[in-house]
Image (cartoon, rainbow, N blue to C red; front, side, top):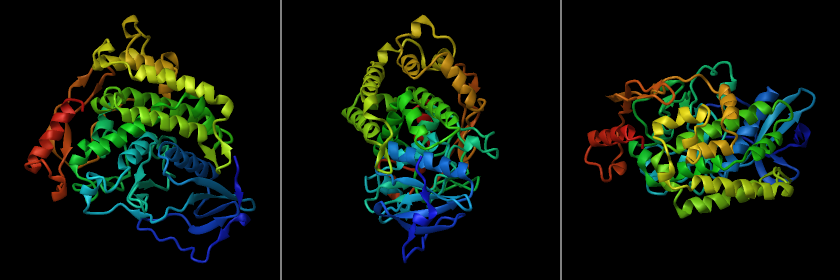
Length: 428
């Protein structure tokens, strides 16, 4: 992995970085000899933490192509590391009191950014660490609190990926977050949001973005994940490889129980996204020079993608068991009647069965995925799920003031909450 030497970084005259977010690192603007672009340079004392952020931010760029590039620099004398983030033109925090702009297409990409954040266990998704570029595309920066399960302080928290947590986005439901937009601030749930409104969870645009990010992650073959991690982690990368594979499998399992995602699989957009992520994996490079996946692996990649495509596009009627039976069946020894099911085949493709069971040991013990991080107004009894013996306890729905721009087609706030309640009961 290439690291720039500190003396190769050239500070620009106007090197002051302004940010509305609380900054805990020394930040300045620099130029690199091999790049015409300006870069934001952030000091990180711990080299392991620097590589963790590098891996996380480059994963965002892999799944969301308009994300800025991230590189690494080092002071060989002090052994201090620096994260170099490509400066984003026109970057600004997410706007307050304009939630309708995430519904009407003015601002795009929030669904992708939030899904990938959930996938990477990003617990510090505060405004400022997520914002908009000049084209009003959502940009995620500052990923030093991703892979939170690897930190002693947060390792006992729940980071499960389920159809419930997927369906309830943009809210952080069933997984821990320290900051999550303005919905959770420093571990405290907020009663209102000035950034998003409840109807966003059902927005066609937002759901399409979430589904696209899910699909791209689930299309990453085993071998590509290994090559990707090896490009950024010199030693000790196996734990990240195992973690990414395990969370991809869990994400796929949850997504295939999500009605919106299953409908997306039968659209032309899904086919276009498959071509896009395949080409992205072929072309993805470090420092615009070193291709992560060499051309000698392209035939293998195309074969893997074709096989996965055939599995994921099986018609729903070929599912041989009820959704509540799937989880137990996948983790345990496969039964004959499951051999043709979409989920068991997909997880087998990714090394399911005994291998998946072993990888699941990396995940935290099952906990009741109650919302737990929002101030709620209405309680719902959720059924006990016999599949994994996880009980959904009494959960509550978000009580938020809805901006007028978000009330289109909604009679009143009570109807809004009832609609969300019904969707939760139906599993989205």
